Amino acid sequence: MTGPNNTIEIPALIQKRINRKIVFADEGLTIEKPLSFDPKVFISGENIAAFRFGTKDLYGYKFVFGRQYFIETRDFQNNTFKIKLNSYYGIKRRAYYKLWAELLQQLWDFYLVNQLSYYTELYNIQQMFELAGVTFEPDGISWDNKNSLRWSEIAVKSYQTYFMIYHIDNPKKYKCCVFSSDWNAVVLQSLLKDIVKEHKKVPKSSSL
Image (cartoon, rainbow, N blue to C red; front, side, top):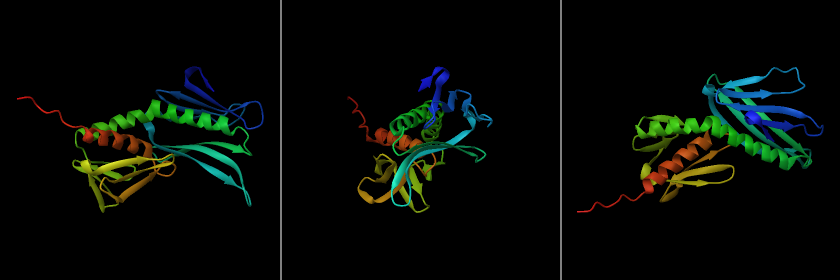
């Protein structure tokens, strides 16, 4: 649940106690473990470079026995911080999913939306940059040093765990970006959707 000061509390799987507290603030993200000797982890908001997220099944010998919801954050020194919510045999599965989605929303609202604004400004001034494996150039994008699309050729199709960038007339020319493995894939998705929408606008005809 969400408490004052943008704090999200993660309950323990079995015991009636709080396992972790995630505190969101403009200055940064704090991960606390109540009733633990582990020190608090603080990540400066200005030092959050990228994140990725996903879910995966937890397997036993012959069957799935649980589900993990995870979020990874990386700073500019390449340190990675991971938040994992493990549900076993369906216990707290819905509750953990809801908390995981809420954590993602807070992470976006506090830190990642600023990154989207930053990359949008680079695009607006036609500055070359790289984001999630895609290079942005003045006339379009490229990846893997061999594929390129002009702005008017780009189409984006989104799914639950990934999205596709492809040529609007040739879907075989594409790139797949997976939210759980590609850092900042969701930032790239939002940026490209905005750009595609911009290039789909029909210019107003001028009156004579």
